[in-house]
Amino acid sequence: QVQLVESGGGSVQAGGSLRLSCAASGYTYTSNAMGWFRQAPGKEREGVASICTHSGASSTSYHASVQGRFTISQNNADNTVYLQMTNLKPKDTAMYYCAAAHDPNCVRAALLSGSYNYWGQGTQVTVSS
Image (cartoon, rainbow, N blue to C red; front, side, top):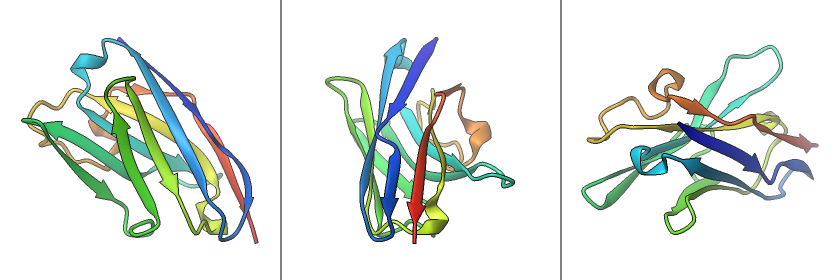
C-alpha cells in the first residue's frame, strides 16, 4: 500500500503562484509513476501533470491547459512530488489530487486516472479574478 498526503493548496488571485506537495509513504519503491489530477465542481476529474521514472530517467506530461505554467517535479530522497503552479487562472480552481502507480516501463497513459492505483485526499486550490 502507498499513502499519499497533499498539501499546499489555498486561495490566490489570478496571476499568483502556489506549490503543491504530495508526500508518499508505505511501499513507495513500487510507485515510479506519479500524477496530479484536479476536479472542479460538476466536472470530471482531469489529469494535470505526471512524472514517470524508467531506467533512471524521468519523463513528464502536461495537460495542454497548464503547459508552460505548471511544473511537476519529485524529490526521491523524501518521497515527495511537487506541482509548481504559476500564472494561475480562475479556471484552475479545483480540488487537486495526487496519484501513484506502479508502471515499470512508463507505458500507461500518464494523464488518465485509470492508470493510477493510489490516491490522496486532495487539497483545494481557489483562484479569484
